[in-house]
Image (cartoon, rainbow, N blue to C red; front, side, top):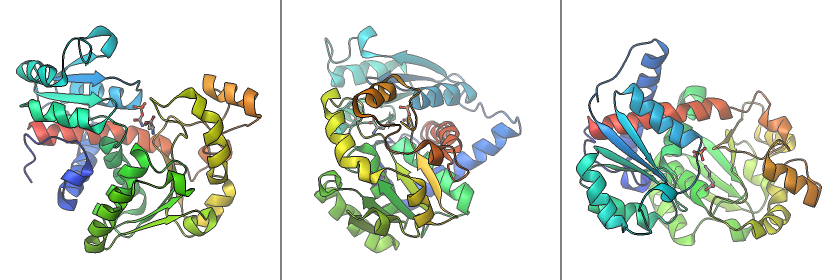
Length: 328
Ligand code: CP
Ligand code: NVA
């Protein structure tokens, strides 16, 4: 498998075999890290990390993974660079590509990261856009593979806002890997119809399936994985919280939902999560709407079925695999 020089912008651009290769490479790199075997095969290279939105996991994963591989990193945020204000994406791409061996970009529209990749002669990795979050997908696949031993045939029920980066990406991932994706939410939050059609077509060849339902119990029945994400994503206006809480509360992941899925089911969440009142926004919402949690109850989040921290750790190993495979 040779992925040298490839961009990593969305899983639609990758074959199931390439995706599986990256997941397996991540498992190998994780094993080596645990055993203390250094893999610093990219010594002397440098990567630029552009973050137009905030991040804990993705930024730390890129920095730690790059360091482990022997690379230098430069973190760029809009406030401290010319990006977008005085310099176009096309010009930024050409400048950064002349100094760095790879560029990570987290920001708004998918068109921006695609434009960056078009003008960059070095690989560009999508660290999250409004539409897709592909590096998260590899971490999720690795977590599922570690737990169940396989990914093909797994049923993944996604609750909540399925029309944004996480819903879209999980639907594409399931289609590609022969998994069964079920979006459990109201019609307004179903993924984009065009993307659903594309995914159904892919799934028909891989043995996967795509189902959209408003019935949370029917949708999560027998699911191997129950997945959710925040109800208001980065870049969306604060005013929208009230509407989302009202409309998506029936799709909160509760113990009833997990029991309906079955005792062998696991809970995943890309994080950060609103499962208690220990955050500024969580506390504000509690005060305004009298709620204790949002997309997932604390009981589920802290239960033995919840693998969210294993999943978060896997962000680093999978991002390392992406950089190693595309730069080596
Ligand atoms: N899951 C994820 O992308 O987390 P961050 O926003 O902290 O990077
Ligand atoms: N949908 C979330 C994902 C965070 C990792 C957001 O875009 O904010």
